[in-house]
Length: 363
Image 1 (cartoon, rainbow, N blue to C red):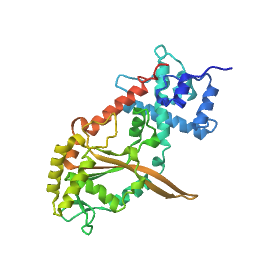
Image 2: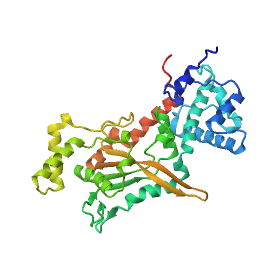
Image 3: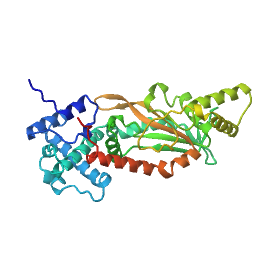
Image 4: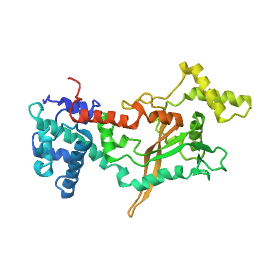
């Protein structure tokens, strides 16, 4: 009776640990590695598949050097080029040495393979195969509703629409670049390419808090988004508590009076000050986001339809919607809440995982 159960294999398959955090592999021959790579998805008996794997390797080397490694960290020459490695399977054998302190080849092979794993999943994402079609079908409905008047003022909705919302900014995040997606998948144990929901998105910036909520209402009323396609666990509201907002709106409606947006915002502010102890925000933990970053954020999915010569493709694709008022937008763009600070924290986490500084818990 064989009683050998490799602990890392068991922890990865049924324990919920990420393969990125495996400190070493457990291969003993090139043939064994070849079978593993075939199961992974690449048949090395096919020349085009071999080229695909080498392309992933070369992208990974560039990503490591340009975006992940610290200035003093250098990949050994023997692992730096296709010519020096010769056979991609060798990386897996080098990575199977258990003590990288005595064998730096193990450390660097593991680092390269970790990045290759993420690059492979990003490269095979539908987005990079149908970028234009996905962007056009998702952004089109939003762009058709954002108009500029003769004075250069921006609005969501036309004059004919009873609920036209003034905007300070409307921004499109056209796509998340490959290196950003790879770093994101490396930075979080739970992230894989198919679960990166914010590869693309839109941002609405309004003058007032009240108008931010009006944007959400408008998108729903005009069927720009479908609430059935929202990804529930990805929603976040740290802009203003929804329970207090609805209470204020209910009170104002009961007075039967007409209020302008300035009056409504003042009322919202006063009510929050009085009731902040029972404010119901919707938090979504992100280890790289600053706690002071405020926004309404949610993920919707759009059914993409693509005609090809041989088939008609249909698949849901996610995108992010952000809404905030202008003062919040300014605050979010500065200090520790800025995007640059966020990306630096993310890069540091990716670096530490790639270089094996986060390991399995002890047996």
